[in-house]
Image (cartoon, rainbow, N blue to C red):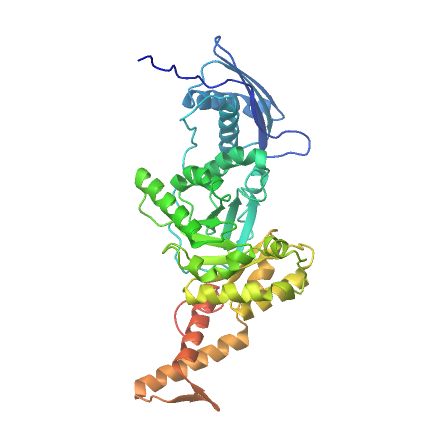
Length: 410
């Protein structure tokens, strides 16, 4: 029997990244494979006099990691950090049909701890996954979570490059106390995202446009396979995003589809588009969907997280939306601009009056317990166990926000 010869990959020029007067913290790389003569690297950079040798040396090391021996490499640098340079070179190499099966991984920083299952998730800041200029300072305003977004904020033609950039960002950037989140693409493209990001240990993965519990199960199973291959034992939490009428109707089965789900959220722009209606600032058209998600999340004992508020100039509207969301049972919401973070945190914080009342309820209840009294009242109102549990949760949340001392009742 005659064996079929293997077909070599088609080699072609490959490009990745961005450059120009409007760009910063990025780099454009063009790779032209050739058959011999080794690799030639040509660099243009405003900081060439200071960092040119370092950039060229790194580029050569990345080419070696990707087993590229013969290529012409043109680099236009706009102040990119090493982890960005590495990701852009790797993307260009792979678009050129080279480096298959190899990775150029930057040195990994200390791995952040596992985030608590029930940690505060008042705010999650979306960062476009293909815009490195936003990465380094993303945590300055202290959102509870940073979302490196591979889905809606990334052009379809840039998904592969963004995936490598987000992978390197997880390895190289310290986001402080922020929970490190990644929003992957819809399945099946999301599986390719998981292959790159799961080994870099994000705290949480957001799953967009979920409509069936089976989709969550597929993601959870895929993550477990990657973790087993890599010897990873720590959990990676999941947050499904419901963005359609069907997703909302299946809210509870989705919320209970995996033990790794810690929260569930809603995407109102896509939801209202699915209904063929316009999303308004008042939000009456999506009240049912938000209430259904809150109920399903609480029934599943996970956090209910609201959508983003898209008008970044309307801080008063944002505060009103956040207060309304908290009153409905949401524990946080998304944000698309750093200036929204403090407003959201204020909206989801208990008031001084609420804290004082909760402390009194807890104190009266504990005093009654010590005396063996089963019926407790505060003023003219009876205090039953659900009221006490609600007060305890509020006190705990106030402590977590720094509104009360960590120890003691006042």
